[in-house]
Length: 148
Image (cartoon, rainbow, N blue to C red; front, side):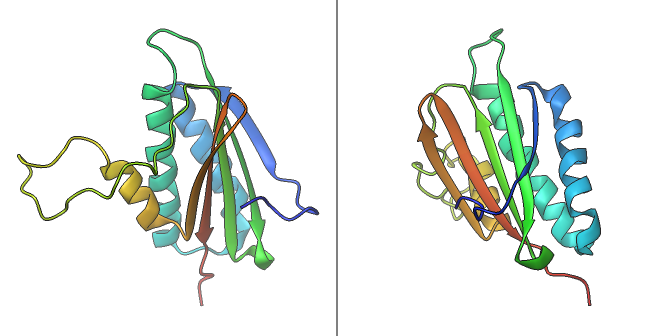
């Protein structure tokens, strides 16, 4: 899901900490500001990004270890789609290897974990993972459904 060759995504690289969450969210909001994207769609984008970024901040690097996250994004299809790529240098982890959570099981019987990536999949048109050398790459695509 690479952007078209003519596309040069905007990038922001920050420490892999929870303190970086707001600057990343502000960065993406700035990218979609002119798209006339409905509030509901903006909420879905912010929720999916928060889930992915918080998981990286919590789990990608050893406790106390310094790490980074780089977020790149661009509008595509005349502003009707948002492409987002999230990179980190943490331990290899493919969030899509885990099966879908059992949503029919009672809360006390459900396996811990997996709901976040399930949520990300529900909020995106496409979500893919790849390992590029020593870097995790999570690519997300969102439909922006311009307001009428």
